[in-house]
Length: 483
Image (cartoon, rainbow, N blue to C red; front, side, top):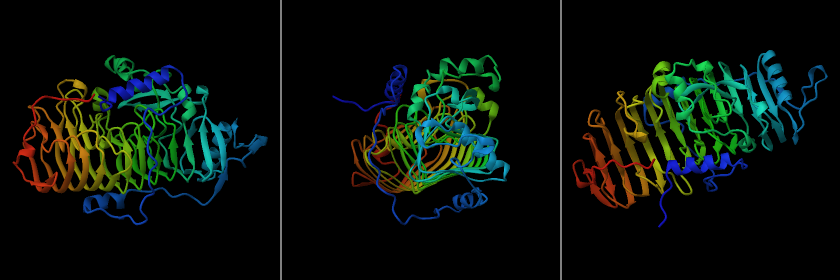
């Protein structure tokens, strides 16, 4: 009998491919996504969320345009979009000229442009036109070491394919393609726990924790930036997290498509960011679709920066695990998350919502609201919560409270809820109202230390249920895990 894939299976398969030195292959092949509806709501039901949208600064740019194939200052050779000529230096020159002129648009015209790492500067909109592909090189020398964050811990690693640090007003826009498939030749790595965690334990400063060549790096990452926009582009061939803003303020991810790939290829992972808008996106992933992060363990406590004020609306997704994940790296805390009018496509997702931490990572999740979600084909419980992720233990108890779910239309799952908190830190309030759970293999849910779950106008497999009914009794009290 076949069984559902676990995260460990995906990781093992992805690392096996990398260690074999193969070209990038998908451990999980996605479906062709449908087009987004023409009409989508432009506001949420929550005044607080609408206020976040209104306060989030979307960068604007001067009208000046600098084409990468038209900037040969000083007699330098301009870029050639033939898929073979290295355009790294020409793109960097064009970005520098744009910044020096006060900002504007760096244009990538139709063609296939072979390049190494691209570093964005203040006031630069890297615009990849329809018919244009930025093909990232297999030459690891073209990706210099930079400060980054790997699974919640700061370190020095090879540059992401597109990177910015400390910039104000940067963007990647257009209807073109970012293709990282060739980076599988070098973007590999072993498990973080045996490489990076010991450096933190020894007290090595973040800027000296070099993991170059030993851990994978993200695809598009803005680090400690303000006013960030990623809009319209398609990301393909990822080897690790695809869109990964870290310690940023005012981030908008709009109309982006990520394609399913192998292990750990999360679609969009805001990490210790404030004011993040994710809208009208099609998120295919071999892992989580959207995962909110805020640092891990001692390093997360050192940085101590939450991920907060996040609005997710009008998005569709397909992937192995959670549509919306909170954690597992949430040591700095995550709060004020609003998800409105989202849905699955194709083969669906693992869970609608997965909140995860443990008593080594700690952290908190507060005020999570999901309204108008439709989905089918869940491989795990529709809503999962665990405070014992990966079995790790310590003295930092996680705390989860204020989770409110409404207007759900979901079908095809093993069970509605799998909520497993700790006796020392019971789950706080979780409300569900105006919800239909259809085709649940078990109409009852698994609860452990979750005393404050309430229901209003909820049906499971066509039968109305209420707070205190059998659906809220634990199927069993055994801790289960799919890790």
